[in-house]
Length: 189
Image 1: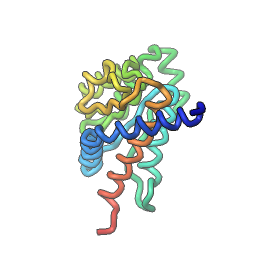
Image 2: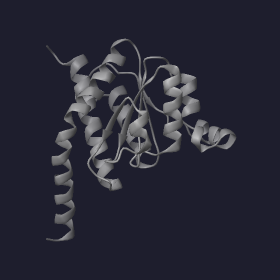
Image 3: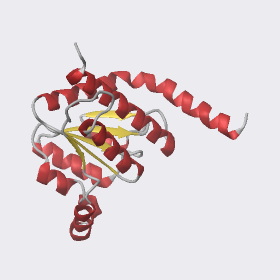
Image 4: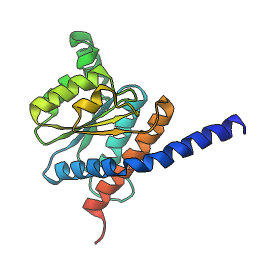
């Protein structure tokens, strides 16, 4: 077996194990649907590749996933470089998400924190603010869940401790959730 076959085999095994996370994936979709049904929004945050996933998933809701439809309110706290750098400079990098959330978050919104380790301090700080404001929290993490597992209302701890494999599963699960949400609101019945 060569390296490529080994890598593909590992990805396939991870996704086979991911089936066991179906109940929490469904719960997350239901949380997003409930929030969106009453005019709230889904807010994403993450660092590095998880920042890219945050932006990607927010775009799936605001734009479209598979159905040409009206936008669903979503945003990523990772996109405003002026806010990120000003807050990071003035308050410290740990506050880049919590400060933004305090400014735009309202009771009933959903904050989705994406972190392969589950220990990103800036996401944990944002989860603290979310609790104060009555914002629901969802963690996308690796298999240990890290500190976010204890702090989040729901935690999708995917079955791997390898960063790239965790990220592959995060985006796949995010797509599944976006699809469930989209079909709930816009499927032709």
